[in-house]
Length: 175
Image (tube, rainbow, N blue to C red; front, side, top):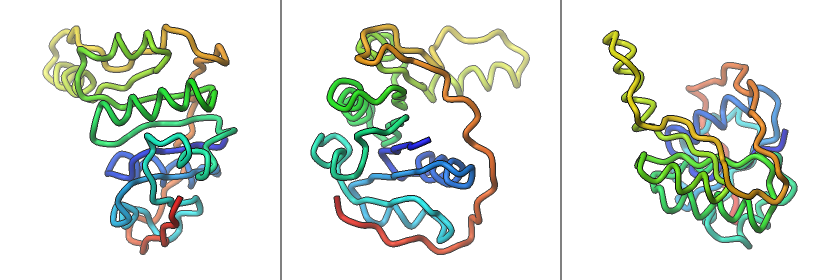
């Protein structure tokens, strides 16, 4: 699978390592070159400095024709902008945006963007740990709105493998 990850923070770098180790073609974009220091030297994908909310940057990075785009920056708005470009301009069939604000999840789903809300996931995890009922906060929400390809498939298990967490990072290239 060809996977584009926008944002090389802790979640983005960890996800990139896992999917690369599982044999997927992984392209990671971030606006900060230093962010790529989180990737091990064994990372076989592409690390590209560029703004994932810019359609031209996404195209130059190779996002066109990708199977999956996950937007994992620290900002909900940046993630949704990147995801919306992936859905509308690039017609990427599977798009997910990480969000922090559970109130926004339903609105983004209507735009055709599936979301993973770490606030909802964390609240539910704490409730499970304490033996309490699940919260009403959305954790994962599938896209319900229009998507050009009509696809909102499950990503499946693309996280097999254990990357070398102590290896040095690869050099990033400019988009």
